[in-house]
Image (cartoon, rainbow, N blue to C red):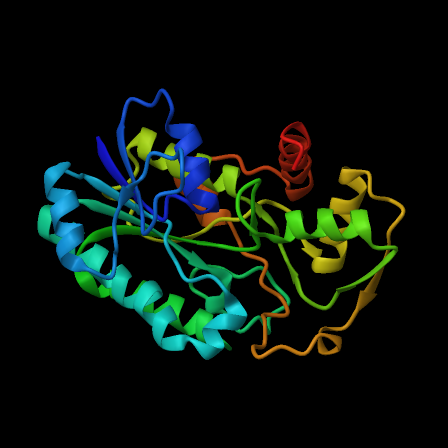
Length: 297
């Protein structure tokens, strides 16, 4: 199968690139830029003409969209740009997928929910984003659903990896250099190791469970924690135990956007549909930190 990956230089894209080595499928990795030493085709997904060209030239049968505007705070000031990337560009990919009969796997977010529940969120839960990022990602989901293409939307949460900027890498740095740190404890969810999400996507592709399995699914690691719990686990696994981490309330860190207070995703549908075992977040965190340590990051 010929597979196009967008946003290949991001966390999930890089993990997919790693898993694609030795795959029986032919992957075309694309992004808006090409870092030195990285084999990436240039593609601006806001330009539908460019998408049509690269899809046609490579006879693409499946598109995995990892590209997104993910800066939650910046989206409040740049909602138009966030909308172009998270909604209009996604509509472009979906339209081209429909034109050529390709399958689209699109990544969305827990931020489409308000986070007012105290129970794990199913795919049928009412969406009600509280900020620009969530609104634009929900608009992207709608663009996919309205396009007429065959698709799977995977909502995920709290993504981290050895690549790029993320909470794990930030906490490793801060707990190694500061004597004290305050982290919010009133926002609860589940961290997701990008490698595990990439493996789940590859599982879908390799088992051929796409056509006939269309729809929205939730995927994160198993378990539940607050950002405070997550930070403590990161410090402990990193050996940065000298830093004293204290829990605090969200209102002690004023933000332009109200983040979901509870965004634990129910993965029952994904696990039963795709027969996939999802690791606990603590086990996956240890694996990621082991990679970071081995790379001296």
